[in-house]
Length: 168
Image (cartoon, rainbow, N blue to C red; front, side, top):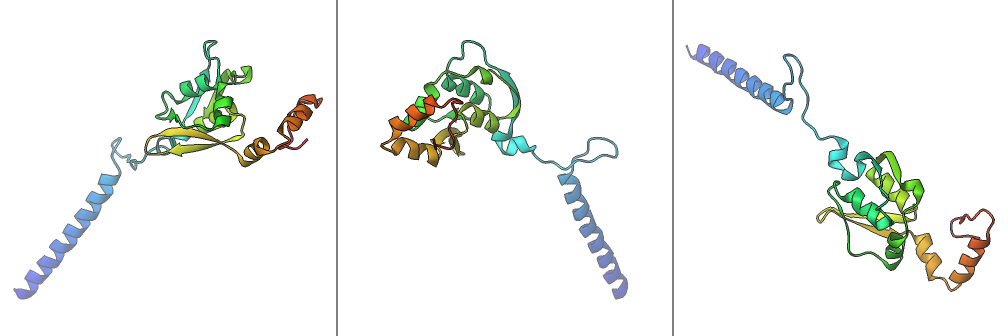
């Protein structure tokens, strides 16, 4: 009798362990159909909100880069930080180029980088969900130099009008 009790306890123990493992497996995979299960997880754009894809057309009432960025961020969960550098404030006050009036199938980060000219780094405050633009080092160094006016004159007079990484 002692041997049969041990056997019964062993069978019950194995059954309970198997039941717990099976229950954990089912809890992490909700059923969607009779035979289909799917593991519960967030989509990539839900874990990194800057990866949200969208398409947008900016109406004529959106005049400045600042207006466009505020509209882009409106439904993203972010807002534009009030703490922006002087160079950033100047960039934000510029008019929105016609090339950026239509943005299609782009991520939020790609659109923000494009609209700001690719010369600013995006800094995200995850707690306050604010976006700040910091000028890249090459731009900050350009505006720190004493020869800034000379550089700007040479750049404007170039036939193709391009800036080659801050070098004339």
